[in-house]
Length: 493
Image (tube, rainbow, N blue to C red):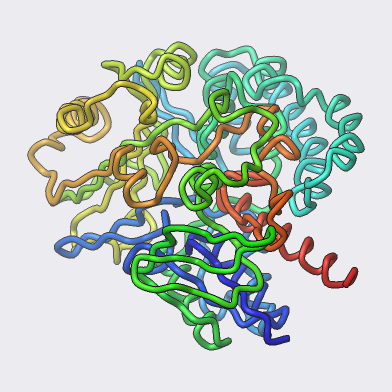
């Protein structure tokens, strides 16, 4: 083909589309601002402690299988995905716990500890989640929404599935116990949404997990990136790290040149941005073309910011599951403070990742590695992160030490963190948002950033801010959408 494709950004969406473009015959180059591939899936290593910086939950493993199969390889020969049990452990403010398990039978036992009547409600929720999954994931996740006509065609199905409900409203219609309502509403936060405003389309995650399970990759997501990097090198993809795109030069509605921090890239046939779409339009394109969702920039709602605390411990906390959701008493009002009021409250809820529960290589012998994620306001809020980061770090450590991790203050070591300012600086994320624009109904499917620009003929998006959305299944599916668009265009030529 001898056509040149440039991919900007090397998160999972960027890596996936690079491999798909190479298989299609494009001379493919991927450029990355940081010093290694992975984007948010980068890895930090400090004094023998290893930390995956971003995604930690592996679902829909077939999407990774497909990337290796493109080149006649098997993912299992390169990466070992192990199932987790439990999937998540919830720790509530009063000390009660709930294990969300790999089988419905085990989960029902856990549900019965809170309210036996909700066993039937949960089973009904899973059945409804499957109906949403059959449309929202199976039929729509890898289909392009670049025309209003296609969106109009699926609206009847979305209405039947009550996608105008929020995730919280849907869950609450099936479950009555307040603890269980919180536990089963939490999934939108994994893709940057408030359960009380996120469209119930994202309730499909319940069935998605039931269909394929929840896994951890031995070696972490960093291992996935390293093996995919080897695959990229083997198939001839050019990799340029420490290379940041600064401007996209457009002539006659086509990108003809990419200006980076250290070179000019010319003779470009197509460009795929794994970078945050609103940042691409406002910074790289200098606002000369604005392919916005239906809402104007000033009205766009962004996902929350993230404060991520990384540390090791000089002992092991064997009672801590691989994934733990540590919840304060407030739920709806806390999320309202984060998403709507954009204020940093004194209380917080946490997602705790303990990879050493499954993979001892993440820490020195007899020690543990931890990553604690705290949802916080993005940079649209007036928070002085230069001072509040230290305060929040201390408060999180104190809260964990007083509850599920006794004497943490004595055993903790090698502490560092990332706050929304770091997300903006390191990942070029608009407003330092952790997951680009929020997954509300009017920012989903056709209403989200399109996978192909309306005016610039050779600009595409495979990113969390474009259809179908954030999360590993979302960005890997986004790459499939771009592939399908380009294949359709090639047939028309």
